[in-house]
Figure 1 (cartoon, rainbow over the protein chains, first blue to last red):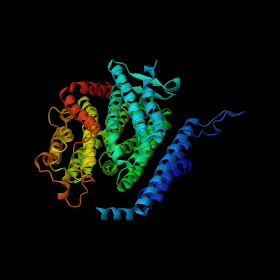
Figure 2: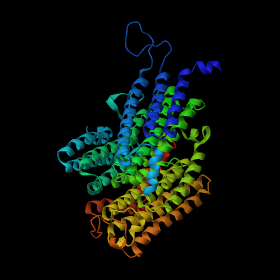
Figure 3: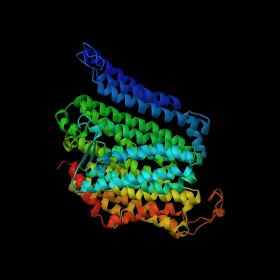
Figure 4: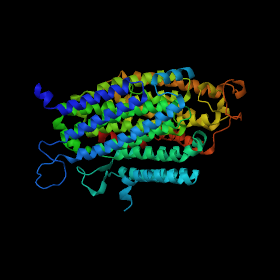
Length: 120
Length: 504
């Protein structure tokens, strides 16, 4: 049991971060906070990939003198792409929030919903 | 040889053209459209050429950068991907033709160049999703298509488009991240990202928890992307508030390509045994898709907005595609694949009609369609053909897909699905027929008779939609009948694709 908790602590951190992010995306009314939640959620997945690529006793995947064991470099490169995707999504989301603020005068989801109900 | 490089060029040309369209659009507004049309046309020709060589019995495998498949990224064109490529490029070309006038009307002049750039990016993303044989590459293309999709939806006329786009973005990102987690799990246990390689390496790991978790994340993520009931909530808003050309493209291709990716994961990466025995996902899908088929139609009946009604109708139609896949036999799967093709034709045509109505009357309300059949005869004829096809009247494509789905259900011993298909056809008839009836058998009311409606904006009399909009919708509507009569053409391709997926 202790082994399951301490031995795989990296995955537990990923799961905890993922839940924090997911909760923020669903439960927060403020659109900016939703986007922050989205970022935490995505970052948890990046960490998941990177920690899965760690080899015990391995060094960074760079050719150096004396190093025999390397971490798996592929997930690192994959996550480089993943981060780029995350940044683009965040950029679009923030641009949308600016437009929403200009159109509705607020970025609170419940207030926007009320306004839309009034419009019919 | 140029022809050898078609698999990559079909994506790269729209991708590069996106940049060119943006820059050219800054010089002169019209140039952006010409670049888009040229890029879509060349992609379509290349996709057709690949479809023909695949029909000749050849599976095209393209190695990016010359790297061998398990290490490098591989693009695969087999029966299924060739068919979907042909659909996406054809619809993209038709919508481009249609978009010229529609965009002039709906998008502010300064935004034309970005619009066409995003449009091409989305097409490139959808084509990439279809052709790639590498699961991580697939994720990247999903995000290219989705992110440009969010921005395109946000270009809609009303401020509600912004909220719809934001909801679409949040749910789309959850979906894409779930897919990414799923890919991470299967990469960690197998060490490969190539679909063909995964198919070989996964079976001995089927009993591990990691593979099952991966499958769960992938199916939920993809169901969200393709808007399978009850994960469809982003769809009606996005389709309703997006500019008309974008609604047509989204409805005709985006969710279809999502369904294609689901088929790929269910049958190419994982095998039929896994879907049936290890994780009985097919039973869940049968329940969900039956609910989608019935409830999509019921919700469509209660709508007063034309585009929203068509959007809810899409929820039901996606149910048909997933239902065919969940039957896991050749007839059902043929029905599913043929419906990807058929629904692209009919929904594309119907959303184009909705856009033409918005252009000429300025209204999306169903009640404003009364008597419009005499004012816009060609547009409304296209609508009627599309509606008949949605209902599934014989000699239209809708009948062909429902026929194969019903046969597949009977072969799987699930006779109770046949009434589901019949009831939903009746419900479809209810919500389409009330419109067809209003179009042709109600007297036309002039705008002035209807207070509170800014009819046509300038008060001009409603006339037929412009030529460049009528042609693409007429072509799509005509194809609904052509492929309904000459059904053996698409069905033979779909049948071969189905037997390929089932691994027989």
